[in-house]
Amino acid sequence: MKIGLILPSVPGYSETFFRNKIKGLMDSGFEVTLFVVDNRSNEKMPCTIIPFPNYYIHNKIVVFWHSLVQIISNSKTAIRLYNLGKKDGLSTKKSVRMVFLNSHFLNQKLDWLHFTFGTLAEGRENVAKAIGAKMAVSFRGFDHYVYPQKNKNCYKLLFSKKVQYHVLSEGMKKDLMANGIHPKSISKIAPAIDTSLFFSTVQNNDNLNILTVARLHWIKGITATLEALAILKKKEIRFQYTIIGSGAEKEKLQFAVHQLGLTNEVIFAGKRNPDEVKSELQKANLYIQYSHQEGFCNAVLEAQAMGKICIVSDAVGLTENVINNVTGFVVPKRNPLSLATKIRTVNELSSKEKEMISEAAINRVKSQFNIEDQVTKFIEFYENY
Image (cartoon, rainbow, N blue to C red; front, side, top):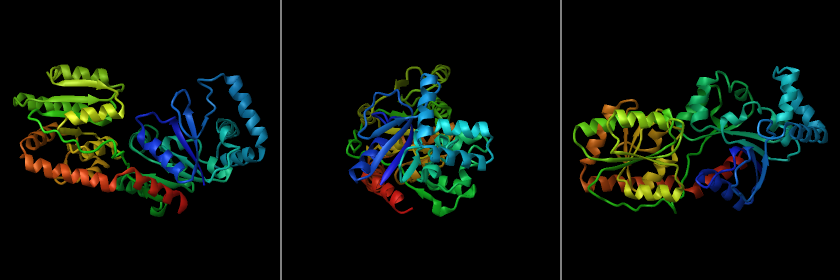
């Protein structure tokens, strides 16, 4: 079976989700081709990589002629794609543009064309049908919750097509059903982590070392986390808070740390690879993910696999990731006082109580969120539809 995966770029070393999925599919006999929007990465993959024709970063004349050659060489498929665009009500100009921007797909013989983010399917809703492939779309976090808020009706055309959807949580599945998608067209496959790398190395200590792994973006709720920690400091509770990740909000968050008087307690550790994340997790005894919204969050799974007590918000996705009062704790989002209270409560738990939660989290991640099971589910996804 031939699978075409559309990604923003070649998966980096830290993007274990995609790398493990690709390896698992290929080990199971699938032929995988990656179509990437940005091919400037030096990352190596054991499969064919085809870049999108990009008029912004490449020589426009060269890209145009390369696309034109593909269109002429695959004229029947190109005409089919053009006609599908016209059938959807696109103007002649937009239909022609759509053919040129998707010319790299025209000669492909695939069983599945899988858009790994919903946003990547925008403007490409007819490509799979034009080349005779089945179409799959994955929704994760930003593409499902944030992007449609800024781009109204962006998925209206997509939702009218025959598509098999992959989502990370039951909450996301219900959202798609509310948009008229039939339940049989939606498969929930939760993320998985490398439990051979992230495994229990619980190191108990008397210090309160808190960790968050997230891109520095407003949706991750880091400002509210800082406000909660400022409450704890006023109560003379000592702690150290490390934030792993990079992003556009760094300056804003650094200023918040200054204003809240947390300069000596907060460390911005920047971007880290998986081995470095593991090292930081080993030093932590409390993990916080206080996001306003999440698709699911692999970082929380990794923390649980390492036996760390996790406190998360009640954002959709996180409430399925952590079982409240069993494998961790769930608190209302956008409520720093509630978060501060829970941190203090957890910090005062007995060693035995903490150990019970850690063991429950470790066992659940090992049994329900391992890579082998996830690859099996994706194989079933492709073979059963």
